[in-house]
Image: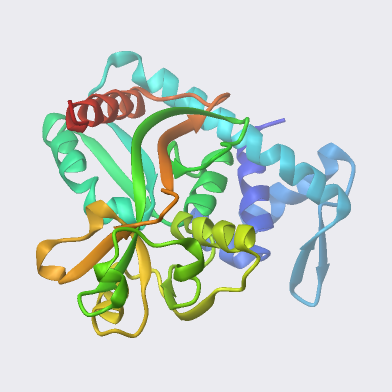
Length: 295
């Protein structure tokens, strides 16, 4: 079975349109249609339902889709491995980073790596830690920073940081006078939170479940400057990592009475090929993180 028709099949299956698949692959639509018909003849089953210009996968097509993703991933990794035999002259690092860390911890590290390896391309994907882990597992990215109590068994992980979640309020809020805040006190307040799927939100959802309470989410946004602004103006409180708070934010942070620590890891697929570019970034990241740890 040739790889090219599998690529065409995968594009049509993901787009559910021969036209959009052709545009995505930058080839003529008839070429895709012919390749798919040839593939269907080769495997002996119909892969798509074609009705009134609408395309959907048959049951057999859905089975092939699961295998096609793995085949393409392995083919791409094999091709990359062969290209890299000449050395670390070019390559791309695709790394996922949660927005809170991407905005306040990683920029200097990313710029330092880029300075050391000017021929390499950095592609940084921002998202919730759960979404990034899913993208990593299916090969859409090569490395990801994740915050997970129990990382997937499909992933290798290396600890990077241990950070504390801090209750964050404006300077006039009563909590500003406390040394620490209990979960019970916290959940009596109106909260400004990240949306579901972000580690920040998952921690709060877990704490609420442990307390047996329903949180009062007054605002939900993934924009950290907006979260800070809302809290500063007194329209709610939140939790943030200490690294996010700057002096000119005019905000106050207090730990939970029972401290909430997050283990932040870098992860990659156990069965995936880690390119020289990604291996170089992984090594650089671990080294830089070790340097940043307090003595």
